[in-house]
Length: 179
Image (cartoon, rainbow, N blue to C red; front, side):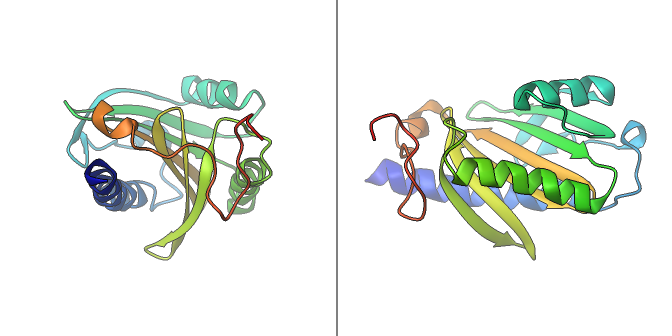
């Protein structure tokens, strides 16, 4: 019980810090990625690696096993002694196209087509709809801001991982194979 409460508090604090920082990162839709400075820190994690442009778009497309129709992208890795995070930012041609990409991911997860993620939640953070899922021992948050799609995967210290629930909440179908 104590670890579950600590994990929940950790997730809320980290969510607020990370979402707040990434919202400020992606606030401007007209900034080109090449001139797009990534923060050296995300919450209390340091930037350890990043790729931008065509290489990032390729990596994002490989994750989805399809062409994501992005015009620019960033993949950044952050880490500290207790946690690590991966930040994916994809820039679509238009806000409408970015919205379609987010909706496609959300529908796939909600319908159980994506067996990797469960515990789908929809939150409002600073007037932005943020989606949260669990999967691969990580907490994932994703959202859209203008032309940009943002996905953040947080891997808290191993002591918290065992306390992350598996499957889906009462608001959505379970996605494990035990059904």
